[in-house]
Length: 221
Length: 269
Image 1 (tube, rainbow over the protein chains, first blue to last red):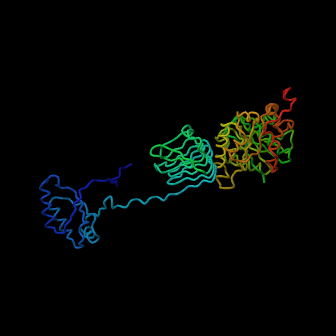
Image 2: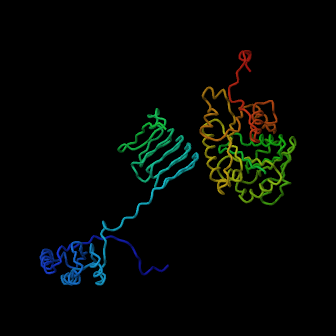
Image 3: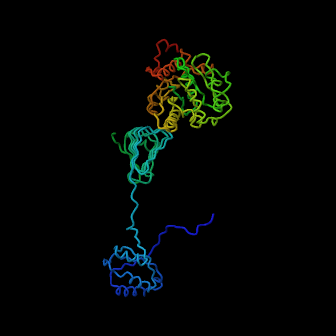
């Protein structure tokens, strides 16, 4: 197969950001020259993002600033934090509008969905509640597995395996009407039958993380 | 409407074939036209238990492959009218069963019979899956011991996910528990799981409890379904189970230890 002549890939770079605090171009030019004098090689051809969040005047002379920086051999990648009027100027000058990490919108959290199963979970069956809690109205048999990213509630006997907080939620709990499990785990910390037998007096209860170790407490269900 | 009953268990050696033969015979004795189908391709046993091994000419696989028609393969039982046996092939393996082929044969049997009893092979592979796929009712045969109970639990999971009724979202397969080789004496001493223990774990209705009995081995070896032997506990227990299957309500027998009389205690049974 022929190799494609271009590819689009995402990468992140660390760029210097030049904060402009004063609209007066002459003052900026003076201070900039002083800075450049300290380490001329370092700034030669350096890519810069200009932060204009301190500039409120919509008629700010962005073109003048651009010329000023270019004359000092600096390369402007784009501007950030600018009010919309200046942003339009930037577009006209062919400068990119860049959102900094903090400004960029985070992915909206997926809504939590609870999974309810109204039957006995038989040996060999596996139920997984992704991104949410799992509620079983029935028993979980020996050799059956119930897994949830959130908490697990079992209104019946837990004889098989139950794994809550499967994607790392340390606040997840396992609640069962009758704990007789092969294995219980919360956020990766697990107990086998023998660990549970130390708490055999507790029939119905809640298994949760206390710090880094599991604990079981009685509940009257 | 014809009913397809699968006798299944997951584990081997718990009494599926014995139960299939007894239940099919029991249904026929009650006047229902019944056929019992051996799904254990390659390990044919049902014909021995039914005492018709010398009369097998064509088998289930021949019918599926169109090498024989159903009437050629069906063996009429000599003792019980209304009862027919469809034997398995001894020379083939489980892969000879296809969903389409089995469906076609069962559909044809439904036209003629009231009850179609499917004797499932052990395991959870093709053979067992084919036997349970078309079932309306499942009789889960279980011995009162932990490995058998767990395997039954597994099969119940399969019935709930892999049967035709489950796949098509119809009314689920009716699941019934048949506890076999039960010994009240050993339950009393704590060696064996009790009826209540098994019922609690499997959580399905109890069809019957068949006591451990010398009569079963004797019946198997002589090719007579044990239900015919109405002198034996096992025979009576199977009759009760068949009656419950057809909707009668009968109290469970043989679940508690027999009280030995004074003389019996002195002179032994």
